Image 1 (tube, rainbow over the protein chains, first blue to last red):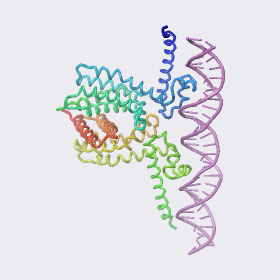
Image 2: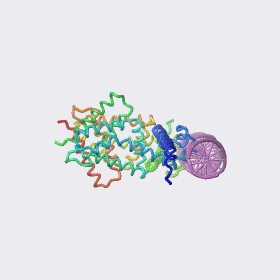
Image 3: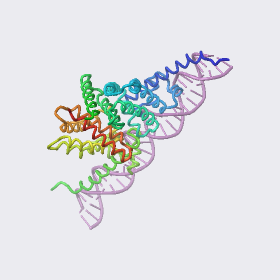
Image 4: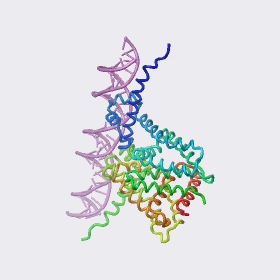
Length: 195
Length: 195
DNA sequence: AATTGACGAACGATCGTTCGTTCTTGATTT
DNA sequence: AAATCAAGAACGAACGATCGTTCGTCAATT
């Protein structure tokens, strides 16, 4: 007798959708107010479900924060994978990465969450571990684009540079943002060029 | 009949000392637990005073946070002023600044507080304003060390770079920290050198 | 009929703040 | 020099609000 495969899909699909919706609205609230200023009632209310039901989908607040962090890490994937799978990494690819990553980190949502997470990293080792992993991938991928004379530490600097630059760009006008990106690209190019 | 000038000093001195002690212990707690995880009772208890008395020295929690931010800004002064008052700014002075500022930002206390404050900047305009002012001074001073072809945006990148680099260096061993600083110095030097 | 998503009341804990009070201190008066 | 006084530092109980979480119950789906 075969396992039921017709009842699960529809049900699980809706559940997953609901869950995703919760994570999404929670993220918005975390961005607006921060982790610790956002209550479970806020999340439930904004997500359109009851407080009790929220606990049917997530074990607790920490669980939601972890889910957010996961989504945050996933948003980096489309930038990271082409960099990792490149067959001929070099300065051009690095330049592309700088633009892409800057675009991501200058997003208000991403920046606010990142700031929140960075502050949390100093105290919450669980979240830290997850983020350190993807960050290491990032650094490794960037390193492969650099000259032989440069190493992981330089790659880390490039990554940090783009991140903080994007963070500072939040809220600026489109024109200013363009200027910042251009300055950043030139800055990075000089910094990774040995003479 | 002369105004009393003998009663105030001794008293005010003790009061100021007390106040400074509160700010100091509050900072430690904020570093350990974060702004919003630290309660007024924690601060009062650790400072060795009563909860009620705490409100005789500070209007409220926000007031303490503001005081912390002020102290934080002051700790930057010994690095900032020589840079501002230099008569012959140049790459050597910039190099010195990079080392000094890295030393400061890689301090666990400074880094943790900075992370906390950055996260707060997105929501608390009052604190943001105070910090933007000193940050602007920093950028201006760095800019004066750069080649004519480079501007404020490049200076901002240098500052951001040192900050994030210091933040990443927290918790590392002395040897690793030295390596990071050396890499950073070389990185910055390349980035501000036009060819 | 059985499983489980959905619900909101309620729990204990803790939050920032206020309050009335006592005690210390330095200045003023005797 | 001693007594008196007001200012305010110190205190801890108590307030109302909100926190994360649990619970018993209901309704819907299979």
